[in-house]
Image (cartoon, rainbow, N blue to C red; front, side, top):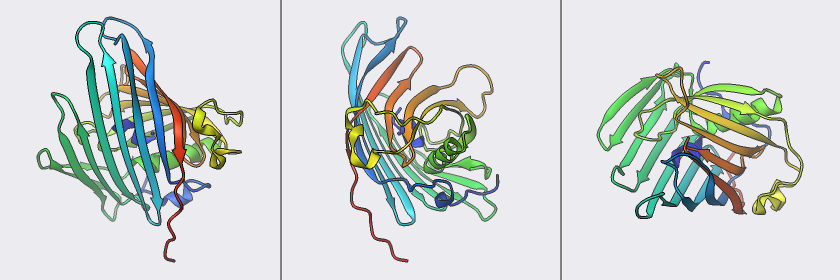
Length: 269
């Protein structure tokens, strides 16, 4: 949930291991709706008010993972007219972590479509090829993770009681050329009732969840503040609640208000 819209999709040594070995409980296919509201706001650049929604879908079907996300935010600046922004992201990731395809669209003056594909060679090295808005190729080493890989590693680290997880992540966000150094702070497991209204779903009952804080730093910057920070509760089946997107001058708080779990696809053996 990477959660700009692309960061919500990220909530993941040598080559990328199969995800089945990373998460003990399978990542659950689900459709989720989050209501957004303004959280903390400080300084002259912070909005006077903001509200919106995130519609998110994650599919874990056989040997691939697909995600789609639509984020809409209506913001009232302290001065001037209201502003409406919309972002759409879709990704495809194979279960072995070898192939990742992504498309992002953002509204506004600088909005444009970014489309590309990242593939691993036999030695794990990553080749990123952008097809839109203009062709470009980027190379990265085998340590870089895709979004679902990162989520699986977070859950694995949480189950082992680790408090910090450092990772390099490529999720196709922004202009499709950034690889982030992501610092994850993981809190102790929670089993108390979840306050988000849709968290009472039967398939979430009895599952552990961990408070997670992700700080995203560009890989070419090793000091200073992160580009953004994402906080949320991560369930052991991959569902997220209690979103908090921190943009520095202000934050957006997201509540899970609806969730559906579609019937799993029957895979060929």
